[in-house]
Length: 463
Image 1 (cartoon, rainbow, N blue to C red):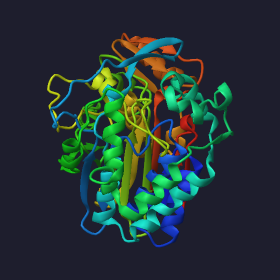
Image 2: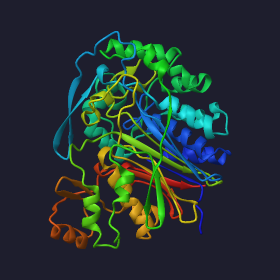
Image 3: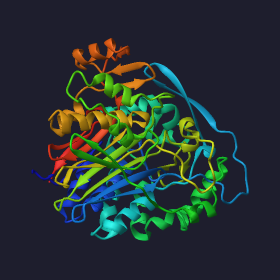
Image 4: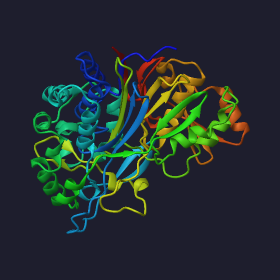
């Protein structure tokens, strides 16, 4: 059976090129994924950054073992010496409707991206750490062009992203950045250089850790030195479910993606599968926008590394002189469960995954952005590749639908025969006027090619 070609899929051309160059330099999938995510922290700051959190899924081609690492944000408060100030409410308009988010110092949870990338590299990397960080530092020195798709996200999220110190990079001269204009964060190159020299610990027990505590507390947050010193990357259980003779492997996320795949109808032919798929995807509750991005990498030895990271919307609290926005996870209402305990992880929809073929080898490495639509985007993409026989670019680009309560939201061009099946089964249908980043942002590398999601300006590159 055909093997997966080495390649990188990401949501920005600079991110994908960074990963590919690291592969060309002899790096592993882990090296390339870490380097690409660091590039995300420069090129895709409307979605992610060093002040955020994430998850990694790694497939070892030799042992065929799948490992999931949790480096999502942790609840602060272990220092126990202060109460948070009120958060700042902002209205973010999406689809013409306002959604209320909370930002500011009190929204900042303990970041995990530096520690997580360091752990992925420690476990599975081959190149020296400074060599993996160097490309991102280079991008930070010059700045990068903002893709048109990212500019649309920026427009939606400007009340949070261009808040406070964010106005400088995102709204220079009072005008919001447009597509194909230069995004530049002063100080970020110096931060990347220090990360390369001192390693991720600089954000936890080093100088940047102290700066982070002082900055967050000055803005009304509660992160303290004990919160940072206590942060650890965690290995979490790997769920799996069958799909048309293949097996999907991923962490147990808030949306129960693997459980959803296990609950798909046995009849997966189009168009009759549509009502069963909609029922499996039924997701009640708020539909938040979410700023997230994903990198998927496969190396020439067949190892795969998929990393999804996020800032939430971003708190608007920036590390002075370093160009680093901190996360706003404590202001994300749908992630605030009743059991928020200092030191413990917050919940997340993120679900980087790998799919293994009947022969046990890698078939697809994929992940998605899109908050509560991550599951929708991944399920549709996997159905396209594994069941419908599409290439990875075709499966990612085709129109999708997303279920909210009794309503199916469909992108333009979704097959009328399937919409008719859904309507006949009692679903309400809302057809959107354009394809938009609301419906997720998949990046995937598989036996049928590599691609990033056009909804996010993504690209796929093969070695």
